[in-house]
Length: 164
Ligand code: FEO
Image (cartoon, rainbow, N blue to C red; front, side, top):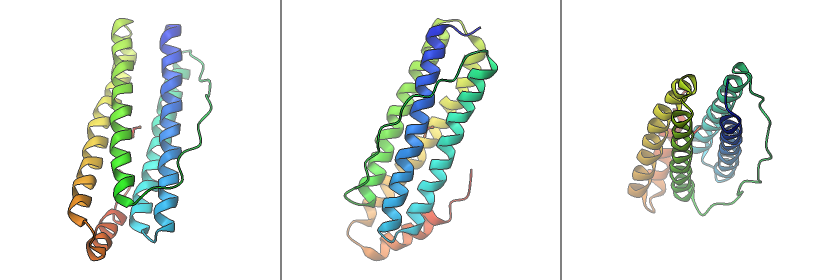
């Protein structure tokens, strides 16, 4: 049986995953409006993945006899300085999510809740991937600089992203 503290913490994480989805959808809309369909597609896939993360935790919580209680989601920012700015924000955001997952894992260890630890290991690994992907795009964007041709090339590259 999950402790009340873990139920509450899992519910907060569900909210964070949905908030991530909301943020990435807003970023996707921004990129689409900037005529960057590849960036928009990449972020839209990310929106979908974040929704799946939230639902994975939701279903786990319910399966363990906890109750998923949905928290409110703040309005995400709608405007960004550039596509580079968007991906700097993505990286910062993912680093925050990693810290949050690690905090949750620490709580599961402290609570001696082995099943939750196993469930969260998937998220720990996923965050390694999330940060790696965002870092690679930020580094790529640093090389783009002010070149519209390079930006177009990166847009094509990101547009080739398929569902992971
Ligand atoms: Fe669900 Fe991007 O972390």
